[in-house]
Length: 356
Image (tube, rainbow, N blue to C red; front, top):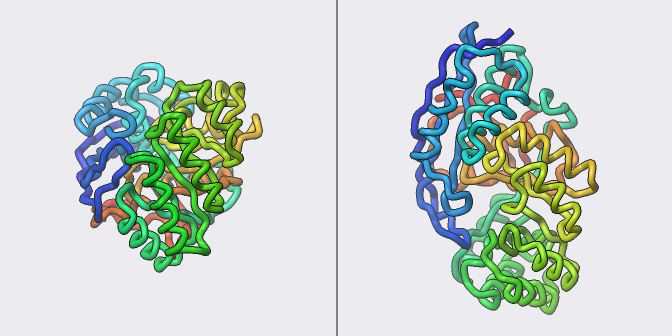
């Protein structure tokens, strides 16, 4: 048995190297929450909650309070079944996914450390290596060109471009600049719900007219706009990927029925860990490809997601780049990165991240 004996929650503010600009905003600091879970044998697990108000509406203050509110559900209880714990937290606190994720992550880390087991084995043990992209945040043409050059100089060959903050025409010009700066790179676009149908079609046609092959077009339209998603899918061969539209396994099944998307972006922060696991399985069972991403997370949460993706295996697109946007952090350990290559194979217990 594993009894959770104490839970510590504190704010975690991480300055960024540049504003993480998306269609809905541009934070300059990741205002996250650190969770420490201690089991009855003294084993400590770490979790990170990364609310991203610009996408999910959650704030650091709300998330900190939500974790504290969850304390009574788990303290002095048996926590060995992390999927059951995740289901309980989701049932009681459905509107606080980042908080649930931070708490679930800390508990799962503690359980794996106690069992002397790396998390990638807990999540299936399919592999230990991934290849990540890096993001060009929203901005002007010159920013896009400069960012693309910097990314390929790091040895990263897949570029994710945030679009939807301006017009489709402006974004097409940014994509042309990125292609010219990084002609060998794979490119995809993420609108974070920033386009309407007309703009999304214009952007897709701009890509086709300029012979820019997009790997995916992520969240081009708002959540719930089912008819527009189906119309867009009928008008472009670019594979569509659902992010904000896929927050639960039930959402995944609804998207399967609609037939518009071919990819699902899994983010533990928008669903919690147990629900993310259910989403991954639902997507795979129904023939949808998978992407793994995150909010603006440190090496702690990103390493957790690397374990999840590597252990599950077969993830088509990896977007675990936000530690590269963080100026400094209080942690040591985590995945090892060379260019775009991420590896968790050296980690022998939990997610492998500790306080420095």
